Image 1 (cartoon, one colour):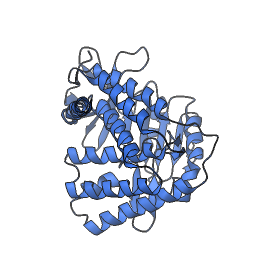
Image 2 (image 1 turned 180 degrees about the vertical axis):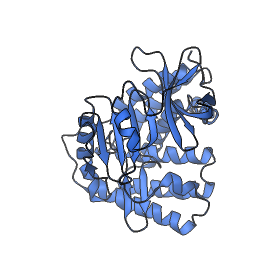
Image 3 (image 1 turned 60 degrees about the vertical axis):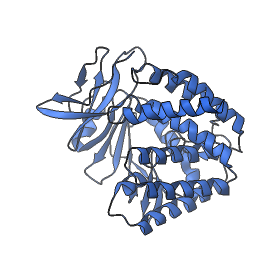
Length: 350
């Protein structure tokens, strides 16, 4: 069993809230984490004894370019040893820092996502003179994420409806565009491997449902039984934090590193599961979540994704998201409830 991260830790005379935790990678037994204090972000690690050690500001031995980029902006995200994102002062754009030699992969993924251009905007990549092997810079896109819109009490219903209508129109246009047949396909079997991996990580936490591994197999069985539609362009991590809406500029899409071809039900189910999560966490009202779900279901029907397929991929995403969040102090209680609910539902259907 791996220890749970504490809700906060002290460093440099400040209290840092631990908001995100990831499973260990490779031979390193420590769990990477991200902590926040005010508007500042620091990466760190949780060791096997449950002790937290934060990295120095703008430092990461496995992301050496972070030291060069951090002084030019504000770190807004940091997964130690994997990636960091810095909002740049010069133009409000963003720099993504990855391990040496990995930047070309990020650029290629961005280029392969050009199929989305039929309906959505993507950030233009720019060169700001940082190491091309480790840093990818992108221009700032106007708009606010659906996540932020949903959490804004001042947003009126009309704008919420406009944002979701714009997303539906843009998404349908993107899915109607010709699909690049050379892009890999992420099918139900590929998703099964992802689900088993995350179930394994979740099972190593002390607060997970003891049925988690068994539940994963039940979710996979549902995916297989639901069948599949023709693969189209897919984001593969579509959620409310990845979609920007601007009243005049329309819809934009963020973080295209996982772009692939897949059953359209994958992205639609993933988005639906994140809407459920926003409602369960109290970030969105029930009314806002209901409107979003109605729009997602209508979009699914318009591209030939029936209720059974949509429900299967929504369940898969809900399970995976719960396995991710079971490690994170702000959301582990909700995540544990989700894992228990899914396990109970599958047992009742046997």
